[in-house]
Image 1 (cartoon, one colour):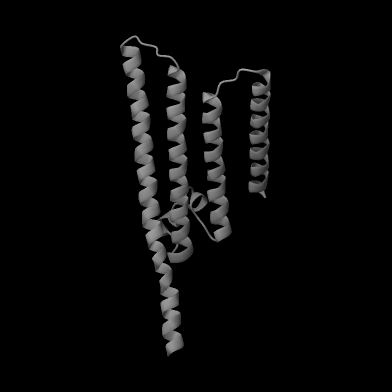
Image 2 (tube, one colour; image 1 turned 135 degrees about the vertical axis):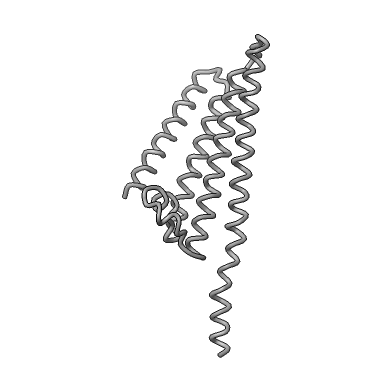
Length: 171
């Protein structure tokens, strides 16, 4: 009887994962809202600059940098969504609505193992890193030929890494 009660308690302790699911969703929604306000701020800034006939120094760098920063937040929000959905499916229950929408739901958010969850999250994290790299490259100054060589090598390294990440994902 004690064993049965212990096993029941142990099995039902998996519901503590609901905390991670709920707060993962809250975090994702928060990131989406913040990124959307950032994009709105950039659009308002661009209209203000053009409406007043101004063209401040580094205007394009500011606009592109802020938009890339928002994309970065969106991608991190996607990581949080995948994390929340994956934990829910692994520990609590399959998401029936996603199973009914076979065209989208079962492909995007269906998680059947921790390895699959890790793979999906790691791919999005790599994209976050690539976007962050792109933002830094776009805002950097290149004064010497050696700087340009480093730029070319780093872009090549990112491209090769993405190529191999795509190869691994197809297996």
